[in-house]
Length: 291
Image (cartoon, rainbow, N blue to C red; front, side, top):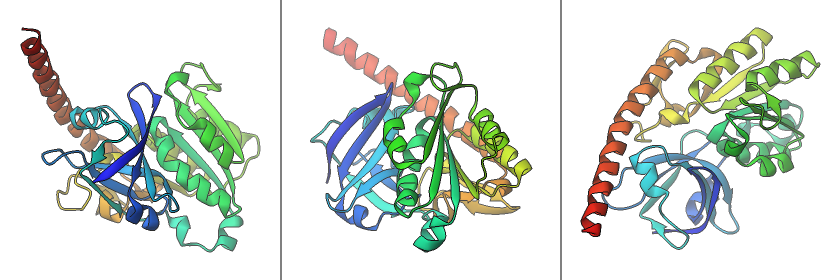
């Protein structure tokens, strides 16, 4: 059993959980993920590692209550435990294979949207510790949905906020901020983007015009997390790969985002049906208790 030692609400329906998992914490690297299961008949959910502490033996995850399974997980409280907490899985971020000296020579720009702020945090912290120059653009529909901005601000050189409604930072899209930064003379060796699929597609289109190598995390496509189900397959550079075992990070300029978006929409339809079934069941249970 893997005990939840900390639970925090980051925004509406978005929760941070720090979980006791010493073996996972000891081996974890930026960019990797874990598979969690709340109970014996529960669904296996892949979640990108949002932080890890080898001294405390804990791993931090961020969960957004979108579908039936994630809503159930989000009802867990401090002191409760996950039945399974497997990992670390997936390939670490490419820059983790570089020497500290090489990392320190580069300038990185991270562009995250919504819950995508969670997986970039350990990456930015890692690069900052290695002496690299790291700027971050965090985007959300509104200020109330921005998460981890304080934490990321501490470990980055410059933090830029953008909201669609202009309630915080720049008014507009993260790509608007990217274009402005480049126009102002900012130069980056790499861009790493994590967030909604359409946002990453737009970032990739933009950086391709500027000739900036770009990495995108396709973690939202993952289902099984071991390569057995085949649900997370995606085309990269004309070849079929599996997000969970070959990724989750890929060269954004070679990803077939249109295919990935279609596949993601299929999951949303299925998850929506499960959620309606769960809500119906809970409604019936409430009627029964009232009676």
